[in-house]
Length: 386
Ligand code: FES
Ligand SMILES: [Fe+2]
Image (tube, rainbow, N blue to C red; front, side):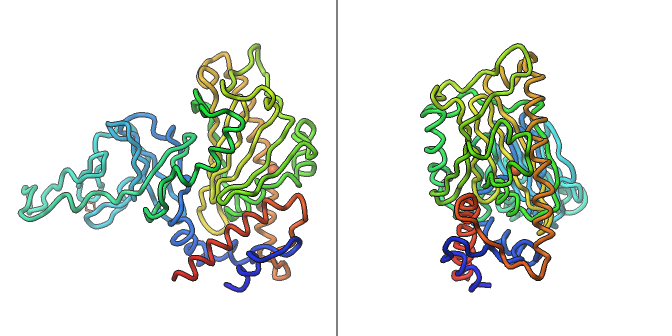
């Protein structure tokens, strides 16, 4: 395996991509969780999944079950969904406005900050305390968390370093569009969610998002107003790459135009950018709305895609924009559904004994090659360290 990854890192234009096994093997899928994902920041949900204190959202990803919890202090925390007593999964379903997290097995309870609260009958029937049992040692297993663009990012091993350092290069790039004040007023729309499960490895969804080469064939309608010729690619950062367009036109499906980001530069109002933040967050930035898509790997050949739309100020909430919001959501959902057959078709192609990673074309596949090199570099680094 190592020899293949070394070849990808060193590859010149036209040479091939990742081997089939990294898309099809269950063993590799687990390896990715424990080594690639665990040591990095990646997205697992939206803060809009837990709008109120006591809201708990369950996320099943990479074979693990996690809880996103909003505390009484408004803080978002993420815990492994497992009880410290005998290891029963704590929550089978999400819940709202909880005061405590109660294990359904022996009814131990945890506060929303993860600390252990109640231990009924721990000292025998009717005896709820016991000497020398230090509750502070049995807080829920907590995971490092940071929220950006409403995406809840986590770092499983706690060793990835500050999230701000990780995201800074992308923030700098986007400041070119929305200015140094950032996306002020950006708000998730209550009616701005959609999701779909695809029968594909998560990496193929990243790769598909990185290139516009397929646009005229897979998205003929989109290509009419956002043609391939108006797209450009960027692939010079360490942890993201993407594409942009210079022909963005807002959807106007009502009397009024959506509010736009106040810092957006007038001369760039037809520019929109679509970065992929490795490993699993895809972003679309337009002056009147932003979408984020999470790729939640479920198995080597299954990925849940969750999409959240955000608008600016009253654009996110006002009923005057309901039809416009819904037209934008349906528009993007249609585009993402068009991509499903492409990524699922590539997954099927990875079971071919003849296919050997394919070939990168010298212009339109450069961002895909960037992702392969990023992947190979991180896999090799982990293999060397273990
Ligand atoms: S396993 Fe949770 S209280 Fe026993
Ligand atoms: Fe596409």
